[in-house]
Length: 271
Length: 263
Image (cartoon, rainbow over the protein chains, first blue to last red):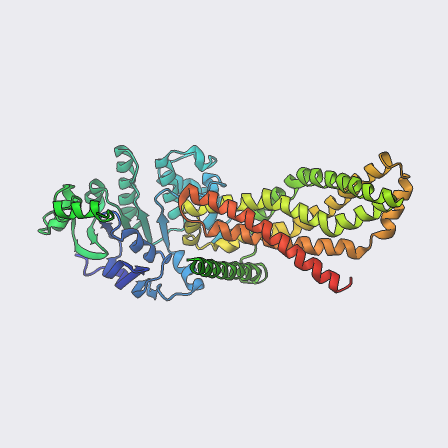
């Protein structure tokens, strides 16, 4: 299915270490135009670090990240600025600037990077706010909004420059089920209506299977499995199965064996 | 153990000094080169920062300088009375306020009021991902956050010091005329006779240097914050303490330079 589509992001052998800890090791992955790719994995598996490499906030120790035909692992500040104008990012907390109103937040990229007329900017703000279902909110301050509204405003800001790719960092974390559904629907709508490529980092299994075209499972800094939602659901890998069913018993160990546990408890005691 | 701690702290100090200087270089770059790349300082940001750092600080700066003028006059009168030279209170107050006390105390007040606010604001932005959001919107945090604060303080602090100087001398005048019984005209004449333009420019030059210390330290501490609410608190304390220490050190160095240059 995805063979004919164009590759927009290509990650090759991405490796990242913090001190002596290896966070990502040899992650390779292609992301195709117009698809919704979900990156999932347990806490600390490196999925946020992976996302930070895609937006150019971190540089890899080894490997390459190609986006729009440029290797952003080696791009300089000016090139990076141009690449960044072509994608949007929804942060976990929305990351709205709290000294500005909602409208000013959304208009900021337009005012800084374009020479659009102020009247047109107003219209664009209204359009984007309508798209995320927040008509008439432009004069409120971010502190007056609920968590879900902040995320939706953050999404409106992320798509204000009409990006080709939108990155989502845990878009549904901490939201109630209805709001989770709303955000999921927004993600799907944007992908369909505007042909935006979406990369979603999440561990909310409900939304993973609702929105994903393809799923990548990261585990301990490596790609464990890539596939369509059906392939992942019927995966034979016990780690994947434990993750999607949420069982406490399994290869992702939480409880240690009796002997290890005794050793751990007594390791600093001198007898 | 002790050697290790000394080494670690020296290493940290060297790294931080290097980072602050790098930030200063970037700031100066954006001030001068930014406009030619079509990315000048946001006028609105500069205006907001100027009002906050300048206009809103007037009352506290006046208050501090006025009382320092009074204290200085009374303290020096106590000594000069024994020599029968009370009239020199005017000269002493004028010179020490303009050269030393005015710039230093005003800068310390601004470091506490404005520097702390800058660090608290920027570090909160850092821990709530707002700095990262700026970067993904292709907005350089140095240009967008640091430059307006740097320029605002650089413009505003010398102005505040100048007004503080006048208020400080006025404090001395009140004591001289209403407490020591010196004639109003005589007090003003003596002040003008002993005060040189060089005294005032020395003070203003110092305050410009102090303003750079305050803005650079405050922004650096803000941008390098890590670790949530606790990190914000720690950075803000660090910012004020470091600014205080550096202002005092810079003052000593500059005073020595001006003294040996025989100005």
